[in-house]
Image (cartoon, rainbow, N blue to C red):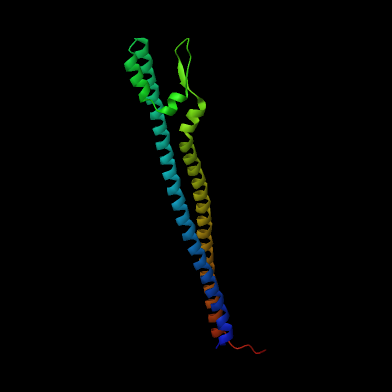
Length: 178
């Protein structure tokens, strides 16, 4: 018969390994949920950035079309109509409009266009940052899943070795030297 002291040691090791496996599994779950949340935030930011860029593009194109209509009306000496179209442009775009007097060509100042797309750029950067966080959390989750599997395997192996040793001690004849 084995003593309680020798029987308790393998079980304490198994309990300690089980606790480590439980903690590792909890961390894997935590990092998995962090990864999922950050992937979701990245997608949301990216969609918002695309929406902001699309909105800015629509405003710029609308103001370009209004200016072209105003220019055409002025060219045809339809001043009232030209003033109407020009007045429909946003104040900011009309202040940032550059017109070549000789050719009649026009464009907006680059500072104005940069400002129009600034929100979209910041949302795009937020999406990139969240994607990096999600990828890091995903890597941690995978590492803890592997760790949990390894510890679980060690528990099974250690338990089996302990069982075989206990079985061998109980079935072996007493040693004449002891």
